[in-house]
Length: 297
Ligand SMILES: [Fe+2]
Image (tube, rainbow, N blue to C red):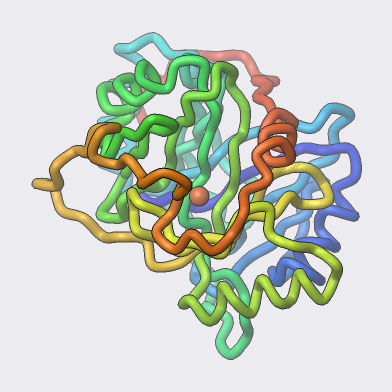
């Protein structure tokens, strides 16, 4: 199972796409169905889809997997009674599968039979998404639910987050103990630390400073720099997230306590708590489809 893309809806997708292409450093790719798509240098055909809507929201977060894994997943979703439907994707890469509404409204789409694109060589693009994080009313319950129903695994619990993996990467998603459900942030994998630093420089050239970072996290050990995108959400340059195995010991909040005054390994940057929290509240979830029987997948 791999995290592939996020599909956002917002009033002005054109200006969001311009920011992501011209400043954040993504490559526009062919649009269809009224959506705009941006890709990275890796083999996924796109990482971010932008669709026009009056009220900004996260339409879906898309994972790709093999057909057999999808069939098992569909069986567990049906047994759990979560709202779901079968889908055939008209986004770049195609594929078919299921779309599922999680207990707090997050919409995950799981596709099999998707196609890849040729990687882009020689340009300083984000490679792929490395995680999409959500705010939760009850992150602990959501962590248990995605383990049981989606087959994901909790990697670590901290005072603020439940980190969840769907492959050997320490986390592909996480649920923040925020007290409300929304999109927390979208993290883009850069090829190395230098690429993260060049990204920070590129945004600085356009008058933007990180809202937190650069730094290195505890859980996942990844390097980060968070920005508030002009079109609303929190976005992150990240790299070098830890790869773990099945016998990874799940950490508890007391395992991840920082020394006084520290909230990351490096301690070299301030964090704009208020600005980040406001941005995290903007993109909510909205299921604009009717659930139906999943049938044979
Ligand atoms: Fe992150």
